Every structure is written in structure tokens, then in C-alpha cells.
Length: 277
Image (cartoon, rainbow, N blue to C red; front, side, top):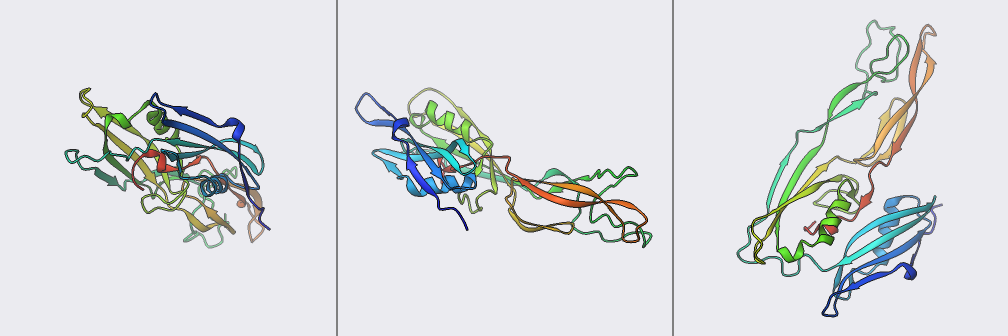
């Protein structure tokens, strides 16, 4: 039975800032999440519990600041001025988009299926690749399905604040915790952003290019005789092998004994990038 998730606001850690005109310029609101088994559950629970707008500020990012114990998380919600507020002028360039499907390299120790064995009585290694005389599984490097894409957007100088640049840096190396550009949670990795600006006049825009990579989520993934229920696109799957004997009892072989899915990237709210999802 799944745990009941409970969310509480931490009033004692609430931080708000105000500009010289008496308007809120930023806020950081922490929450405690109880009963969540994974980071995504904690983030989504806070997303549901927190308000989208705080006065004149808009919710920008949700980040896990601490995992207190197995099912308790501290999540920080950041509110800032809406980067879309008044951003699109009639003379500003249109955004541009690019993509490539060159893929990426991945080392695998396990095949999808063994197509043949020669001779017919050769040991069955359960899909393990490159098993040497000492029983080591060496594997091979393959091209994995990864799509890279980028978007270039133009921002007014008043919107590209130090806080916004810090936010982009903090989001680099995270995956989407909600749907983004048509992709499911966990499939998009934010690789970073680069910006340039010509001139220092208030009307001179920043040109910022955002870079992403996409790896599809997988379900019911076969690993030898094992079935992995779910692996998000940027999770890491590794396999532990155990000694076994071949069906004819003549050879010592290696077979998958256990498969592990590891979460190696934090999940984050890509709304903080300031581009439409």
C-alpha cells in the first residue's frame, strides 16, 4: 500500500526580498514532504500544494534541497518576477530551433536477444556479451537513441538578472519533472545555456541558446531472464552477474542475477528556464 504523502510549509525558513519601490522581487519558500518514496513524488506533491503566483511573483523552480530520511524531503520553491512579462516586443527576433539525432555512445553488457550460438551446444550466457575465458563480461559500445535539440530565445536585458543566470546554472544537469516540449517526465536532460549581448543600451536584447538531450523512458525492459518494470530515460541501468553452469553441465557461465536502476540526475521544474514548455 502506497504511503500517504503530506506537505507542510516551513514558515521559519521563508525568505522574501523587496525592491526599493516596495514590491516583492523574489522569494524562497521551503516545504517538507512526508511519505514520498522518490524525488519526483516529492516535487510533484509540492507543485500541487504550492501557489503558482505569490503577489507579483511567479513560481519558477522547485528543487530538492535535502533528503532528510528515506521518505522525507525538503523542497525549495523559488518565486521571481515573470520573465515573460513584457518580454516580446515587435522588433525582437523570432526564436530559432535546431535538432540532431546523432545519438550517443553507451556501454552495454547485455544484448536484446542472442540470435545464434555456434556450435549449437555452445554455452548459453543469457545475453551477456563478450564473456572471456575468466568469466568476465566485457560488453561493447553501441549507439543509443538520443536526440539533441536547442532553442535560441531573445530576452530583454532587464529580465536576465543575476538570479536568473544562477537559476540556469542550477538547472543544468537536471531532468524534467513534468511534461516538457511534448516529452514525458524524466526524458529531457538540460545540458545548459549560453548567452550573448551586443551593447549596453536598455533595448539591447540577450540572445540565449538552451541545449537539451532526449532519451526515451522504457518499460518492461528485458535483461536476460529478468524484467525491469520501468527505467526513466536518464536513469542508469546496471546488471550484476552470477556464476552458473550451462544446460549440459559442462561449462561455467555468467548470467544476470539482478538488475539495478539508479537515479543519477536530479529532477527539476523546467518552468524556471523562462521558455515555454
